[in-house]
Amino acid sequence: MTVRTVPVLLALGGNMGDRLGEMQAGLDALAARGDVEIVEVSGVWESGYVGPGNQDDYFNACCSGRTALAPRRLLEALKAVESERGRAPDGHMKPRPLDIDILLYGDRVVDEPGLTIPHPRMALRAFVLEPLNEVAAQAVVPDSNETVRTLCEKIRGAECRDVRRRDDCVLQIPERH
Image (cartoon, rainbow, N blue to C red; front, side, top):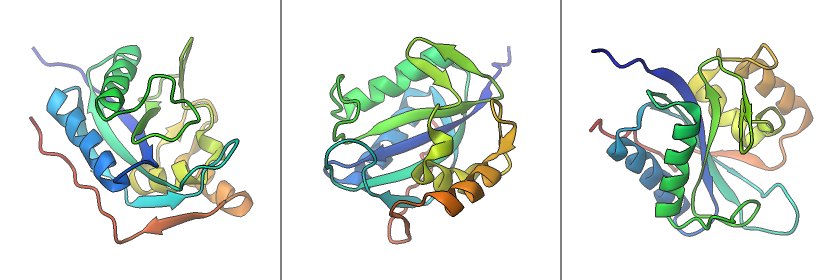
């Protein structure tokens, strides 16, 4: 029997400890679980914190992958990996070693308590769109019917708030398990 998989686009970030190491560990943990096959990983981007108060700068990246998990189950898997890496369950808008978000799940639009796909703020965040553009420029965001490239070009003209590519930092695609 062939298992049907869906393409997914994920965002990774963090601003505590070894930021690059935490993102790599998150990718590796997903691969080890077997829940997500990581196909491509963007470069690493550094950005200032966007939100209330002050926090250290974040590292950000995106990856494309495939999964057989339903959206809610994928979210649960991502939250489990975050927790394993030390993220507190009440860590929203707080410093964190690892944050993994579902940006797109195929062409599905999901609006459920605690789960919104496409990610509701991705089109407003250069630190998401720049790395996402590297791995999925032609992907169409289903609620806007615009490509990632188009959204990225729009945000570049309007809001780049301290977002820079870190060519000295590289994430590896994990080996398949």
